[in-house]
Length: 116
Image (tube, rainbow, N blue to C red):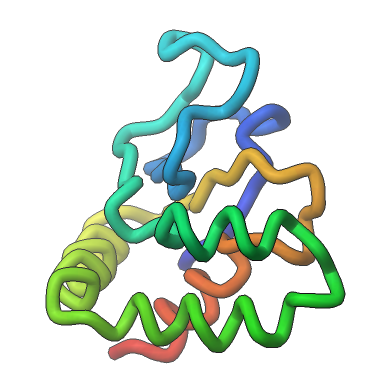
């Protein structure tokens, strides 16, 4: 099972993966209860800056990010996460964005949920 949570509110559970490209503001490494930092599958800097968590750009962001995730390197990483899902009761994708509805973890979870 894959869930998402804001890194600032997260209490460590079975297995957690930080999916932000940059480290969450105001948090020290010891403050983040993540088992893995998968910044390589976060949106590219160009896409992240373009989106800037603007809800009016959500549909286009989602489309562009899914396209980025379909690269050979990213597909390999997604498969690794799916393998981790088999080993753990729950995996939580952590994000730093204030908006819990419009962020990369939402897209990433939907992509992972569709994979077998």
